[in-house]
Structures are given as C-alpha cells and as structure tokens.
Length: 201
Image (cartoon, rainbow, N blue to C red; front, side, top):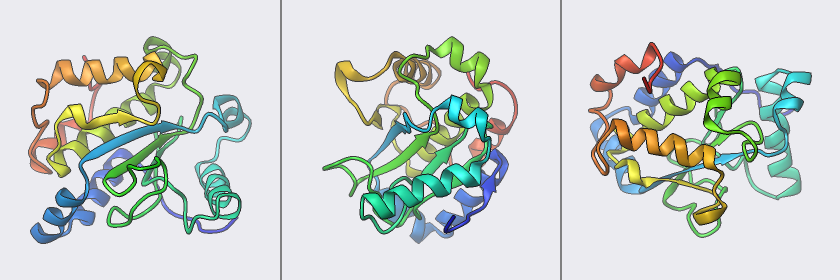
C-alpha cells in the first residue's frame, strides 16, 4: 500500500526525536521553524474501523494514499500519527512543511490521532484508549520541550467553540501540570520520566 514506515513505541519516538534534532544547529533550526503544534483527529477512520482492522501500517498507508491521490499532496499531511494501540508513526520529516491546517502549515507541527473524538469525553478516552491518551500526552510534552514552546502553543484544527471538549480537557490538564506558558522540560534530559506511568496523576 505504498510507503511503509516504522511503527514506534514511545521510547522509540523519543529516540527518533533526539535523532531528528541531531545537533545544536539542527535543534535551533527546528525551534525557529515551528511556533505551534496543531492536534487533529482523523474522524474517519474511527475507532470502529480500527477495531475491525487494528493495523498501524494499513491505516497509515491508507491515509497517506488518500492525501497523495485525492488531495494531490506530495506526502501524508501530518508529521506524527498516534494510533489506538498507543504506537506512533512518523509522517513528514520535521524539517518539512506539513499539509494539515490552511494558513498555518508553515509554522505548525501537525499531530493526528486515529479516531473520532467528537463524542468522547476525557474519562472515556482514558478508560477505553488509555495507550493512545498517554502517547498523546507524551508526544505533545516531548515536542513542546524540544521546540521550547509554551503549553499555550498547543492548538487544534478547529479552534474556538468548535473544539471538542476532549481536547480542551487534555490541554487543561497539561496547563495544570505545567504552569501556563512555562516550558515543560529541558530536552531531552528532562523527558526520561515520561516513559513510565500515568502522566497526569
């Protein structure tokens, strides 16, 4: 089904991100390029689709093929995809501009969760899709730390009143854990603790 890329655990993602930064010069370039992180969900495929065919590679390839063949883009639009299993796949390289939010692609990293979260509250997300929830928290915290961004720079594809309450609660908890506009950690030394446990206790 086209380009097949690696399926990453949270630990693998941390290693990948450290490698993506690579050197102080590369890390500086990434910090200059990205000023926000935008969170998406696929809507379709949703969790029912996933449960019928629980394959990260299949759904990554399906989304990528849709973006290339139907949208006419050169690659999948997102930088990071997070699956209900909690596993992660990399879309576009962090040095490449994404294709996920009109007018904001040049300065925003695109993170997408497979699923339809419009009808799911945070408790249901934590109970039914705890691995995906923890990986979302993990990915956001690592990206914020690497890019030296405040928590306030995590935004959503649909801003304002149209944002589903799941996202609002996730970010409320992020901001409660880390003071508003505070940098979340020193990357990567301050991020190792994220590999274990529930991040929002």
